[in-house]
Image 1 (cartoon, rainbow, N blue to C red):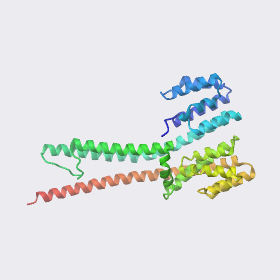
Image 2 (cartoon, rainbow, N blue to C red):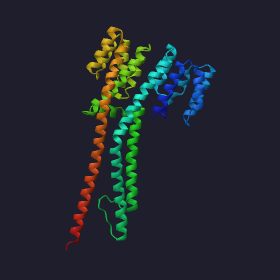
Image 3 (tube, helix red, strand yellow):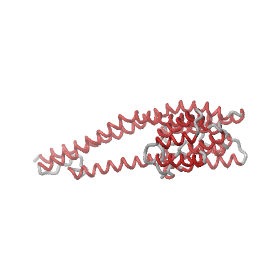
Image 4 (tube, rainbow, N blue to C red):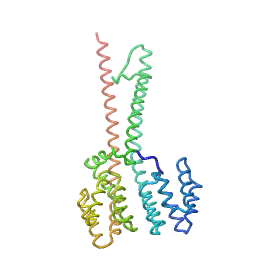
Length: 344
């Protein structure tokens, strides 16, 4: 697992401040000093102080950022280096700010859409916990064992086991999600398998290709070396299917293949994506072509995100329905069993 880094919101605000200050002619040393002075958080303060000290010693801003390691994402580190070399750091920072703002917007849309089903799931889980605890109290006062759920979970001990189990499931899910976001190697098969699921896979593919198209537009438009640009662009998809293509595409370009031929050789790319690359190469306007494709894919990504939220909501509803059905059948069985036990 990679160490924790700067949050997406903090990174977007940093890029916006960099773009505004540098475009206004503020010296980068003053910018870094201000960032170090106003940095908040135990992790951020020492990082920005080291960056400010390094810049004042004569290091470039990109070198100071690179020295911070994984605190900043790869795209930010490498685009900062390209921006300084080409003299377009302010423009690149502004584009990065837009990119990170878009990611924040999509994440917020997803969380808002999934919030109510999650609240209902929490209520359902809480009700079961209360049922386990209450029947334990009733059984204790009546000096008899009452287990309506038939799970062997009764009273304080049963509630403790139940809470531990729920906490373990929640921690496991959070761990897997965090690992996928951080790009852990072992999550690769999970990411590729998700792309093969009907409906869900198409939505994820659209979002991934929107990121790749945007990154290619940005990297190709600032004069970055082609193989480095491809590596950055495919890494931005944050899915193992596309990151596994990096060595193959880079080797094909080294052997003299065009970008279109290299991507076609890798497979897994729709015709529209490949045609845009071919037209852009033939016209000499690859960056502009990818900018147009990026806008189209981002519009589709909004629709894809709605599909994802719908599927996530349905999954939560299915879990709630399964819990309710299980509880109803367990209570019904307990009720019928009690009647039969009371009969002569």
